[in-house]
Length: 249
Image 1 (cartoon, rainbow, N blue to C red):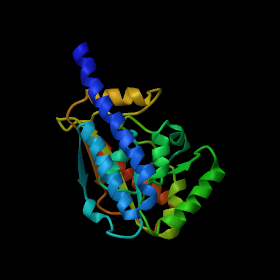
Image 2: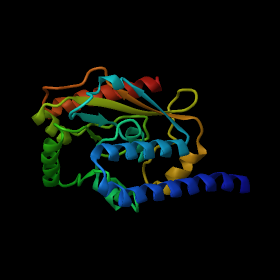
Image 3: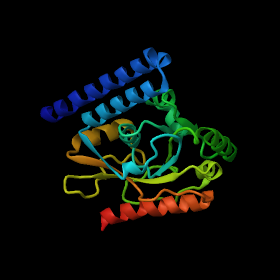
């Protein structure tokens, strides 16, 4: 028992120290640097967080993404660590549910790095966010989680079309992206799933007890463009579901 407690205690200390380091950078450094330098800090911090959890990152079809300008990424959602996984590869802005803003420390950190919070039960606010995305998308990549909630990673919920409106209006490319967490046998793992009544501490503890987890970010071979929001949502959902289904079979 004591060995197990020690095993968890030390990584928890690393996570706390790493969080303090991130908050210090946000307070003391971010106000004085440009956007590109900020992205570098975000990426390095996120890579280190994955290293603490011993998560390995694998990205497929990354070469399809534009080198400059804006585009939309539509992904399935499994865990709070999804964002750090994506940031470690591509620092970008996210649209997250408003509840995240209330998380101690992490909610504030998410706001500081440009996360856009949406009240999903408020249609008027959803339209305001869609308009905001229209202004941002032509110039920068933005990632959305159109399921509206997280799953265990073994299935895909219907993609809601609302947040695709900005991509339809601006005609930027939309990239479906599948997030998968796999064990050492390349099989589905629920080690990172953040669902139900699970607390952040519960999730962190479960992840620390897991071994040899790989997070895969898989971009679909073809981005979508010139579609309305419903067609975009359907296309992205189908592409993501095909990769989730393949790992289960």
